[in-house]
Length: 181
Image (cartoon, helix red, strand yellow):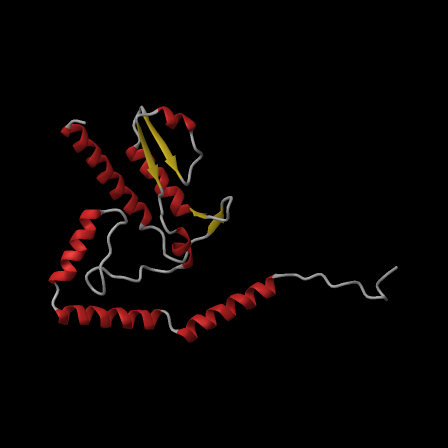
């Protein structure tokens, strides 16, 4: 693979991610309707919109595409390059309105799964942080968890969910003797 080909590919990826970020910014965490695919996996307008922009920006003639949000085209198996995409990893969490718990640099470190360099950088940052800085981060994390995951608040949410579910469920009553012909 030539360095110019790699550079062009990286530019495509960068451009696609910027476009996807702009599209995704139109949607609000927890304020989006979901439909359900086979297997009860949620899919939203955000999933589809991001998938469409990524496909438009990344896919070129002679390349294949495999995405959670589009019909699989088996001709991809004949291609030398196939883009494998999950446009919105964590759709369930997004629909439920659960924001990321860790804020990088404030109360922890995040890095993409499988990114060894990012993991090494996060480990280096952690090892280079002073004990005082780590203690402050830990305290901020503890406060954030307690604020966002209070047992009474979570119990109230569950009670409301059960009540709404019970109210929505219609249970047929057996016919009484008077109602029978």
